Length: 284
Length: 255
Image 1: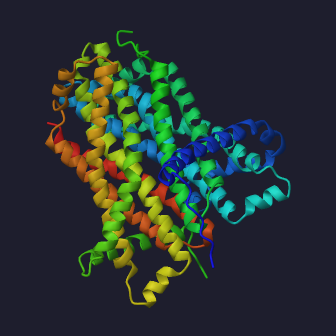
Image 2: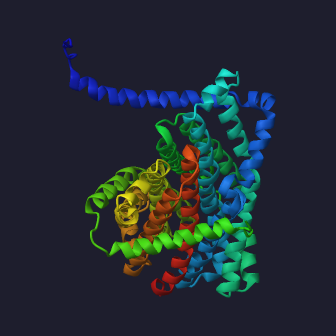
């Protein structure tokens, strides 16, 4: 005979509060994980240097089937070529419709640096390096390899998460250069070779309005985004559960979250850096 | 056994096109899996709507902000509505839809199908005489297409409202001038091209996710890798489609 347990009072209230409390404690555990990951970066540099080098090589050149299409560098390059060409297509035609097509070079120097390259790079990073990290760590988690690491005395957060955050920041430096060069080249080629604008006109407006300070800020934007993307992706991988499908779902959830957070971060950094004045002088 | 260099990617590409052809043929063959279609549409919509709105807001604010820096310099900030409309309808709307449908919907589809494949459930369906393409792939691809189409309209609306609030209340543009500027350069053809883009994006994201899902191999790590590849390949294909459709569509829209 089973013993009847009286239900607790205020059941509905409890159930409602459990959702709210659960949300808060999830945010808390994420914050804890991120703080721990960032704090153990020096530890990772000192103690797990081999793993760090291995990860840098793997992230730059791609792993598994991704290496077939040329790794992260090729994917980032491809995505920024298409978005750079977009500046040529949309910018040239839209400006031509109001009679200003000479300023396409200016559009490339202005929009590529401030808007398109940080946006595209963040998406590409989240898809390649980030999703790869979630898939790897998630598979390790459900195969109980992370518990095994802990048992043999390896600090798993340092070994898996901190090393990846640092490796991501190292890898993004050449990636950003590839992205900017590809975006500029694609916009220039599209405008001069396909739409037939004189290359002197394009270069004049491009060089006049290319602001080195903007480029440096855009670079720091991308580095900041990388740190956040790698943190989010390692967290979701580290806490994957629910078998093979769970790993896939964790990858999806991580991609979704990191894209939203990266977009918000880009917007806020832009607002903070360029401010009300816009840091831009047309008259020189 | 002699295998040519790069034989594997070519075989994968061939497999993808074979599955896509199968899907298009099976799409018009009864019986159509209505229940699965409605369930999948609901699922994709449920996981995509919130991230799509969260992703649209920052991007449209960023776009309007960058554009207004320029327009204020010209002394033409009354035209900020024009810039917001060009950017949101032509690019941000379809691209955000892509990112979300492939990042949220397609990954979950691939994970689900991949988990079924490595447990041999797909083969079990074949043994029972059920065509997995007809029963599982067709409804998923159609669901992704439908939701992408519906989502892009929502994203454009939300993006424009976000831009409106940012311009009017933060940057102090006159609200009447903003609304009047919206339709200055952006018209019906732009909206149609944008919706066509979103439909194509949704379809290709669904096809890639299903192909990667039913061709998974190698256990749990394989599913994770397949989802990763789904994200990478959909983004690459979608950006490629975007530039082609923009270049073709702009011939009809810009007068």
